[in-house]
Length: 105
Image (tube, rainbow, N blue to C red; front, side, top):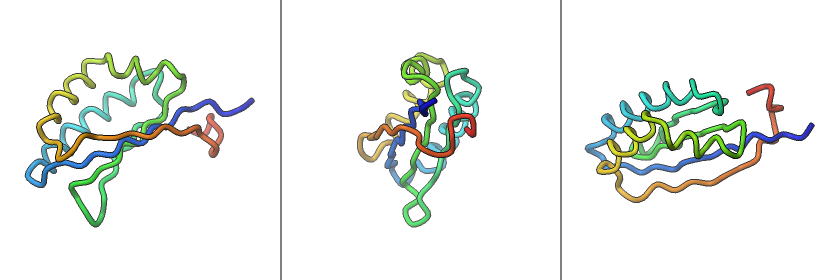
């Protein structure tokens, strides 16, 4: 069986004065996101050299799961909370999982 997980990397650059507030809001969103049936992982990582830069690593079980995620109350709250914190618009790239096998997620 071929791997089907969709992995999305969301690159975020926040204003320096918003780093802690962004981190708190994003961790709250991540804690709820991992409870969604369509999400295998939802990692939040912060750049070691530039703490204003974060990457969200989201692993979705189905092609429909990202859209379902964007309809949840916790995502909508996160989106609206962090919007004024952005130093520039966030960007994302989509990937197909290669390893580990999907069951390993």
